[in-house]
Structures are given as structure tokens and as C-alpha cells.
Image (cartoon, rainbow, N blue to C red; front, side, top):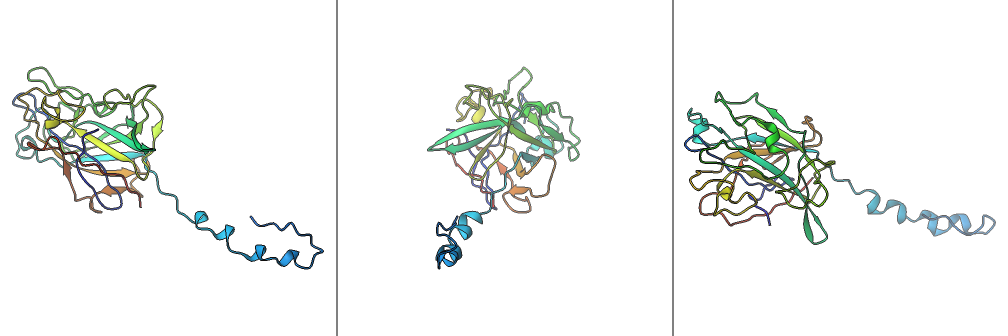
Length: 271
């Protein structure tokens, strides 16, 4: 169905796929009906039963909803951490997608909402980041890696982080490659699935996923690492949840060489 990365734990789990792009050498109720005058109307068992008023349904807690996803670069890209700056340093994020099971079918609810992305460069490396357009992470899967022409459709996090909301797809758009993300905000709910598409080996001709064929044959396209958090509102850290270890130490990365067709599906579990 989609490309997944693996199981994430801590009361919340997220699906993700990771990668790195390169351009040539640079890349990387009980009221009684009995009247009051009857002897037992006011003291009927109905008034004292604990049934309806204390049923479990009244006390069930509502699961929290989350409005945004925050992705931090934790790349091991050698062109990033070894001081050799490439044209696309760090995690190369193409798109994010939110799926929800309706009946027995997983349905695409939205992708990165157009106009929502916030790119934080406060932790950025000293590398010159030419792929710094935050809007590239919004909308559908449309990242491309070319041998000679400039790459397009993805953002390189370069040590920083990016936060986005999910936006609904336009009429008739049911695929992650066409969903525009220009609709209303879609909250992340318990039981949802989130996919993260980062340019990796699955973008090559022999890959497996919506980005298949978007990278030229010679692309190294190794998977970059990143960590993920979901927030109740954009820019509000209170109540947020790291996906993985509670301290956010767990990092994830995408499909590796020789493992192109092994999907692992996980769901968002909200405590």
C-alpha cells in the first residue's frame, strides 16, 4: 500500500520511511411514571439504582488529538557530520501523509498542509543548505533527484527541524502523489497511521513506494536518520509526545539496500 519504516513505541507510534538524496557527487434516565400519591412512587428502586447515571460510558476519557508533527534531523549522512558539505545536507524530507482506517479500508486523510510548514534552523549545521525551501515538505510526494539538473520537491533539514499540520486532499484526490494538502486541517487521532517520506533507495527505479522512479539510477540515496514528535498545537510543546523513547532519543531511518520491499505498518496510539 505505502512505504513504511517500523514500529515506534511510548504510548504513541508512527509510521515512517527515510532517505537521503544526492545530486551527482554532492547529494546526500429514571423518572418514575408512578404518581406522588402512591405509596412507593418516590422510593422505587429506579431512583436509587446506579445503572444509567454511573455507567462507564460517562467516565471514559476522550483521547487527545494532535494538530502537528515535528521532525528533527538526526542524520548520519557523511556529507553532513564529517564536515564535507553536500548540496542536500541532512534528512531529505519529501512529504508526510496521514491515514485512517474507515471500516476495513485505510484512507488517506491528508498530507502536509500547504502554508503550515515552519523550518527551524537554530540547530542547523555550518553547511550551506541549498535545499532549504520549507514548502517542499508540504503537499504530495513529489521529490526528484536528478543526475545533472537541480533536485526538486524536498527539503534538506541540515541539522534543523520542521513542523507541519496535515491538510485534507482536494476533491477526488485519493493518492499520496496527487493529494494537494490545501484543505482543512486534519487532526491526528488515536489509531491513525503516519507515513514519512524521505528520499531514499525506494525512490530509485527498483524501489517500492510512491516515489519509485523519481531518482536517477546512480543516486546513492541512503536513508537519513530523524526523530519525531507530535504536538497538540503548532509551536506548543506542552502535552506533546515523542514517538519512540519518552526522551526522544530513539531515531528512525528509511529503507536500506537489500530491504526495499519489506513494509512495516504501525499506528498512532494516544495514551
